[in-house]
Length: 623
Ligand SMILES: *Cc1c(COP(=O)(O)O)cnc(C)c1O
Image 1 (cartoon, rainbow, N blue to C red):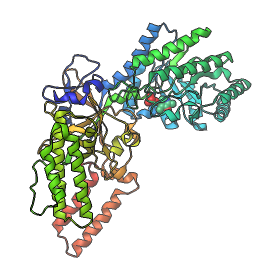
Image 2: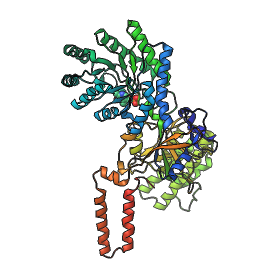
Image 3: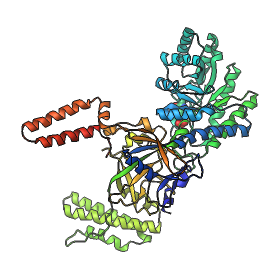
Image 4: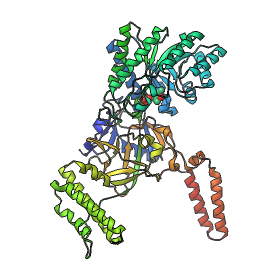
């Protein structure tokens, strides 16, 4: 099947499959064996309800699956290894702050004692409004002021297990003052910088050059100060953030080993630590490579759990210390798989020329040479033909710049070049000659112009070269005949996707089908549930996309659980301090002046004003 080129089985996590009619479908991981639901059908149904693309589609059971898999993996590992402590996960709110997402995670995680991590005051406000279970934790990280700390300590009175993780000695002085003032003792943690670094995208922010936490000497100073002030018994948690998207499980073992050394030393100093919080880092295999590369991981969630639970167990047993409760702040793992971005292709710029342009009397000999390349094209000589074509094309361009060749001839030469390139690409595909040529030909692919903003909906693709699986959502029973780079509708040349994961590795272009008249061509970007939703910006004033949460019904159908309409143009304008009413008034004044000058009829006035008004109320994307 044509679909095998996309490598869906490798990166799909069992959630994505292809139907015999060529449509991409979603599989419910919590109802194995239930019929898959065709994604293009979901989109069509949503469109009929008036929800237009681009759509950020969230699948409830994919989200539940994230929470449940993490908790189940720790539970199983703990029992297999014979670990004598518990696991208490927390979800870091910054990874997806949407109220609906946080609420669902809390609900699903309730029976597992799953809690929340707040890295800021607003996030703590969110956490304190959730229906958390009694034994779950709220972990407060980040830089904290008086108000943040006051709220965290006061929440203890309501039965919340709110832990203030100290990031500095100064922070403790605020804690002490506030705690004395209100007469409530805090639960404290200390963020300790490890000396070991982890590899991957965030290598520079790990180790002792991390901008967060206390170095070894400061930790000792803090313990002395806690002892002096009678707060030592409040320090119950040691925090070590291992990083994010840690690609290599060996790094987990190494850093946890060091974390345990600190833990044991601190207990020796009389600190009543009972929680070891290992932060984030549990990665997602976005590319399905199962390797320690930036967008993949070389381990499963079970291996990650084993690396932690075993390491901590051994380290404690060695010195006869009781096993602590293990905490992780896994955000990406919990939410990344839960949503996808779906958009339509609006138009294409094609770089192939199907029919050979004819030569003309008086053509420059370089053009004749370029025309002749096709005559000696054969599998053995594809690279040579490519080199020749590029050489002649470049010579012709140089001649044009020097005034030797005219615009029409130059235009024909460019077409002959593209025609020849298409033939070379075809022979290359058929003969699979490989080598440099595959990569070189990828520089001459088509552009498919798509209805989305990279800056708004996929900021990490732009900022940190994040790779998400991207595939067409239909026609997988037809061989894709084109290769394309996907461009967005911002007028920024950075607004494009040009890294794709396919079955045979990473490519700069995506295999796509010819567009058809009056037929939507939908593309899906998968696993965008982590970090993407609120990091995005308003470049070119493209606003939030429509967000829809669906539940799969187990019988091949689905229901819409929640819908958030994307921004209207008026909303986006107000974010940058325009008053849409003022804009309308100014426009109307201009129209009225034109009517007064008799440049416009009354009828034209009505058409103009209503076009402006409709646009203000409408979606920022193509409708
Ligand atoms: C961002 C962050 C996390 C989440 O990390 P993931 O790799 O997404 O799981 C956890 N803890 C802290 C302190 C963070 O800053």
